[in-house]
Structures are given as structure tokens and as C-alpha cells.
Length: 246
Image: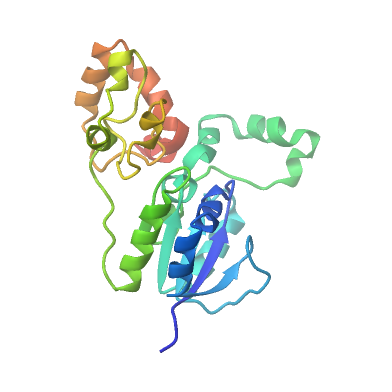
């Protein structure tokens, strides 16, 4: 029996999520033993237009991106968005809240007219997505679990509870009690609260949980002197596309 053929593609993003796949080290041997990688610009020269699973990193930022992702979707039996830019729009969506002409000039200077771009959006805003691997960058273990589930014909488990649960499991002291800002109460878990565990706070890179209780979050943050404006600004750092559509 032939192995499922996997192709990895990138759109607007830093490609850090693909590096996480490379960094699987010994685990990558187990993963690669179950599939055949046929296209991956970052790691191999060979390319193929025939694949069963497409892993897509990066957000859609140009009209031409729409044509390309639709062609990928048409060929792939399963399409997986990997990383914040692909799953929720990511940092690229920060430009959506600014004047487009200003953004072009700021980035490209007098060559701004060369670059055809529009408001950034996640892959799911253009084509159906079968599974998401959230994060900036992705969690390597979660990526492996999602891929294995798909190979077994199962629906991957994607947490829909807040990072606060991961923090409790990790035994972390709530950073709000330390006088810091934190997006944990409304951000999707699954990262093991890695940022808080390492001494920082949750930036919200995995996006909001489904149907977040924003009133409760606003009340909680207000108790610690954090305004709704500050919270919205933090949401826009990664999940701006969703906030923009509200």
C-alpha cells in the first residue's frame, strides 16, 4: 500500500512553523516513515502536483494567493492550516487596522506600487480547512498528534478551553496576580502554557476559544486595572481578523 503523499506550502509568514517540523528531530523519522513528502520548498528540491494532504503555513495577503490556495485545496484530500498566520490570520492582520497606502509606503518605500496586497486573512477565509494546528510557532507534539489522527482517519483533538487550564496543570501562579497582562482567560489552550511557564505571559497566539465569554474576561481584567481597549489591542496582535469581523 502506498503512503499518503504530503505537500507543504507557505504563504505570507516567517516559515517558523516549518522549522518546527524540521526540529522534530528523532520524532520526524517516525512521522516521515508514515508518509511521503512530495513538495516542501524549505527542505527539498523535488516538487509534485499530486498529493493527498496539504500542510499550509502563512496568511492570505494577495488576490493571487486566493487562486493558489484554491488550486491547492482542489488537489488535496485534506488541508491542514499550521501556525497562527494560517489558522487565524496572525500578526499580518495588524495591517488591516491601518491605512493600506500608509502600510505599503512604510514597508516598501518608493517601490510600494510594485506590491499588490490587500487585507490579510486566514486560510479558512478563502477555502475550507480540515484541521488547524494553532500557535506561533506551532507546538511540535500537537502537530504530530494532529497528523497521526488524520492518517488514522480520525478527527484531531483541538482544545477549546482557555490557557488558564494549562497553567493550572503546570502549577503556574496566575500572572495577573503579579501585575502583568495576560490573554490566557480567553485564548485557546494546547500549548502547555509555555510562555507563562517560561516567565512571560500569554500573548494569545493560538487565538480565542470558540464563543469566548468576553463580558467575564472584561470584568476579570478590569479587577486588575486592565482596560477593554488594552485587551482589544492585544487580541489584534494575533487574532485581528476575527476581531475585525466582530
